[in-house]
Length: 640
Image (cartoon, rainbow, N blue to C red):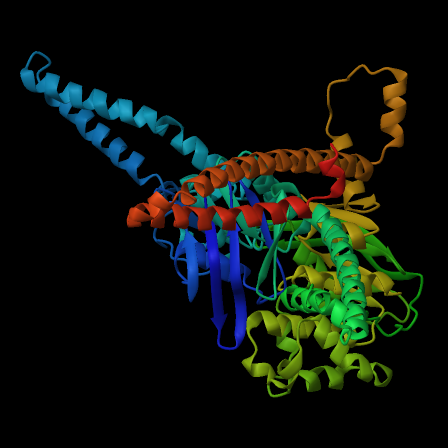
């Protein structure tokens, strides 16, 4: 559906795309990955036509409707939530208004008159079109999407303007989903969604009928929604036909294969050069020497792509706290008439890593502020343990920064003496490199300030970290570095995050915050989901003993991994079959064209010869791309 032909684009000296050819097919589910600034968002803008390449073509079918979730948006603030989203059905609403006008006319016309029949006929036509456009289901569809994205029914009649930017972004997403474009472009669609809304969106997109191309830092989301990953790096686009987890494995395997191929090539070059040097003055071998020299001149040298540096950072050892880090007893908290917590009790022990989960508005951030001592409560008691030193990172984290400092100075001033040599490494981990470290803090973007503030907080010695959305503004690579460092941290961590992979890897206990209560679940996020599912009563299912035994032994993670592997294998096999069929068709057509082009008489027809040559060139280019895709699929698939 979408095709890039030899696209080249640069911003100043930075090459974003270098003679890139790429294409999608019907119902593709593509995840774009790559470092910040690699060109993911730029690619989406080229598809919409907002950005044009310097050379090459971006081809989108003329009749294709492209829907893009923009970073900047305009909503009619005087509209209610429901009306703002329903406005996407403009054509249906116009027909509905026309039907109401005709209904009023029917009520006043004489049933026996000729005008009545005309009005009745017009009403029948409008009603038929209304039904064809599924107008009677319009409000139900709006309600389904609003509920899925976290709007409770009492919100539907409220004006748009009272909602925060994050909630308004959900309305933009709701409008986009309901408009059902044939090509759906999503740039970080989960940024403003809580866990429940992310889960709903994944399920909604699973049966979406069009092409989906998305950028996301949420690995769970990429795994569930996509089955093709396009890696954009150093001006090159490389496809991997799997979800994100499969992409990580396939990318490493591809690099190892390429490294082995490059090694063999270098050995061959070395042997060939040795032959040339040895035989250069042997007249009997002159022809062979010249042949080898020409072969080396024409050889395409395999260049290994740069691998990301593995950055390791470890926090300074914090002072040791007492066994009990903090304790809440009978905490009650309300905002005017809204009760947030009632009689909440909680004991946190040294070394625990606790993830707080629950719907938006349930009180997770309020609880974090209470634990940090920055939020008052109405009743109860909060007691810190012996020698507890707290560092709190809330969503207003940038307030702690000195805007007049240089980036590197801001961290050096906060770092303990023995950590100062690692400051530049830590800055690199949080995406500050080169001249960035000598910028003034005041000129940084909002996201850059957030990353710097997180790095600063993590450097300050403490044995209790309270982190509210620490992964905001971090790409997957930076999230991994932060996660690795937090896993080695010897103190106590309590955190809120909407990144399910991050929660699953870091948490050793989950606390569900909902309905003014806290409920503890030992284990990681997947353990929590399994236990929550068991709490929901289901009708008994009769199973034989062997099935029960197998299910008891299998963990949720193993079952999920097995299912994901099966899905990936089926997808890859289908893709392999499609590739081989396309290759056969193009090769057959090329053979036909070559036979025609070999006929001297065709060159008497200048326009016809030109058409054949153009088609041959285009098909040859497509065939090259298909062969590269075919070769990059795992060897095991070719033997199926």
